[in-house]
Length: 347
Image 1 (cartoon, rainbow, N blue to C red):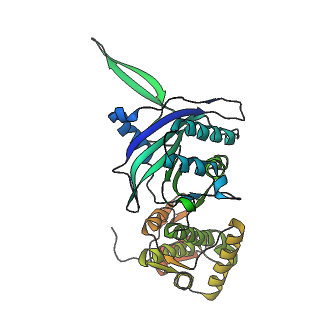
Image 2: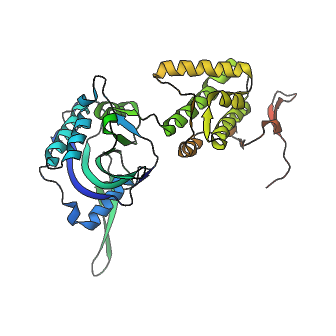
Image 3: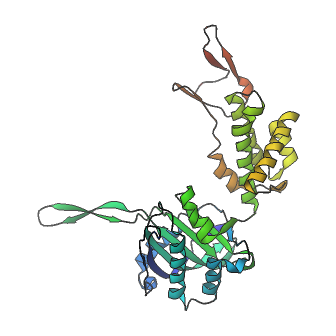
């Protein structure tokens, strides 16, 4: 887990990185900002930089040849060892980002590079290198008073409640590529340059990752494959999704065989699920482990995307949370489809 309550912003510098493909410039600062002398500004910036990192999802730096060839990994290590070259190293980071800003949809923006002390990761206080980019500007109203009235004007600026892109590099597990947390609100293909090209990150294979990946696998099977292999209704699909998430909520440890038996029950469905898992692994270059400790934060996060809503035309939404035997599907004599629901109490 991560706790930023004791964190202190120690160093900060801001550069501006344009789109290289569009021949926009990169503007580099020569001086760091004295944030330690500006307590109120430091508090606001700390909130802007850190408050968006909530889920304990960790990555690590990698490189196809050798970790030492990952430029941001190398610069991180140099800054953790000594911040005397902070301005120079920050310029190098900005230039590296500029080299990868070569997609027409990548927006120009300010890049904030910060050194932050006393961040707590899994009970250990450590320093952090933060790299943040603001791409989108909001319009703000500003009021002022004179002798006769209150005046209003506007300006454009960064909304501190929205962080477009960011990463935190924790000074721990350096031989494994450090521990890195990531934010990228764009999340589309052209925005992958932030994670895959600029930072070159891979997920850390911890319990959070295993839990998240297996729930994604189960959801993918139920929503993408089950209906192709078997004759199932939407209510059946929702029941399988509910069974999947319930297994993770009710158990502390995951066992693949137990999961398949508890959720899918029938031999042919289990075989279909295993085929889907093998295909998914091959297509996405993944390897699922068969046993791990279930991460409660990952289950809580994934529960939000497990939809238990049966949508019937534009007239009805039926939320199915439990026993599917209490819902029947049929067709009347006029060919109209219907569901019959059984219940004890109305509220």
